Length: 577
Ligand SMILES: *Cc1c(COP(=O)(O)O)cnc(C)c1O
Ligand SMILES: [Zn+2]
Image (cartoon, rainbow, N blue to C red; front, side, top):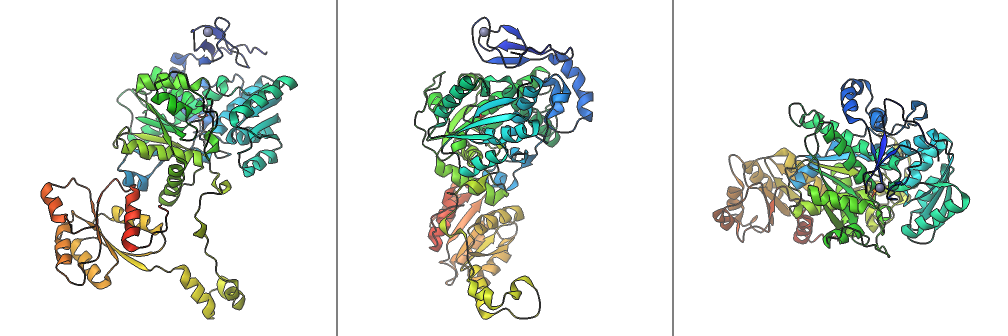
């Protein structure tokens, strides 16, 4: 073991999480000499850093190494960077409107070099290995760590042995192999794979990445918290006078081993200790129902996790049945600070994936989609309040590798005969008319049979409804932005369905409805009413028996909406958003 003398300005030490014993810093992370515990916390001279940071941060780019005073690397010459960190904090406008959550933010970790937040971990851990002159490493992974470590190892000239459970998609395995790592597929669960990797490492005398027990992994994850606090301050203003940054009310992440949230939590703790934020966020940790040891144990109020020996989920990235020391740690955090653990089905996960792609243009990998499915659930349960500041960790841009995402009819094929007949018409805009066949085929692509009229005075809300309907692909949609124009539009188009807002200036939704019901031609067109306000009993009576569905704004996530529309129009394709 190599002991690195602490550089004076860093003043790093290690503190045993179990007994509080202080130990000098070294790589690899030592076990506690007093109690044998192997979960060490890294401590710094926070007062000093608090003094230094305002001036230093002013000059540094928004990247992982921005926070290097609180990262355990001594000599900058060993710093490896491929542009990790400094990811955007996106506002989710459509999603916010659908959910009624104005302060919803997406921490877009997809924009790291290998598209997941594991790049933070790789950057720091591989840098620390270089500093400690370690040249070979064994790692067990559900995919993303191996991809990320492979890229950074290639960059740093480190030999990497990756051990993967057989369910990791072959495309991910190929991605790992292309970086020159050894790829060993273990035909078993992730937990068994870890044991095989450990045996191999011991046998070969190669260091194994100790995951959450390696301080570098957790320390790297802190930077997610640091960045969020800086970005929220830029978006929403400082927490209060004298407290320059801002913590969210909630941080959401899908968890397997739980390294991410343990690190993020520590990051916020350090900021709190330095007076940069004025409170701690709550953690909402999401798992797949088929492999949810933390959620199950939380529900039973167990401070230690009961393992899941036979994981049953397609969301391989988080299929860890035996969580390590993260669970007791996160259990305590949630107990003391009011966080929660929640499980989602694979079906809910795939649905959330579609919602994010279609409503925000954000493609996720399934593990990140599970996080959003968890968000939807916690909002509907009222655990997360709609006006709270919520940040969702969004990671993994690997959904081309997923095969089970799309319905069978996602691809429309134009018969090649048509193209053969007049190939030039496809690529040019000459005056030559396309062949009949081609036009016919292209027209069929755009066959929107059912007509829908949206009467809604808020253009943003109208746009959202239009978008929800567009994702179905087969409606012809017309909009009017006040009651009178809406009525005229309905009279002229005689749609198959009307979506009607109630509160509009001039002629309101009630009046539109009165007019419709008095008209023999229009009275049978189904109406979905959309309202932002709680209705009085009298108002409800006015709607009773005259409309097909009442939809509250901010609850557009209700699967009911599309199901109801499909039922009303007889266009059920079986799949929602
Ligand atoms: C690694 C990973 C997780 C789980 O992270 P932990 O904090 O280690 O539990 C979740 N989602 C994605 C996309 C990941 O890559
Ligand atoms: Zn100890």
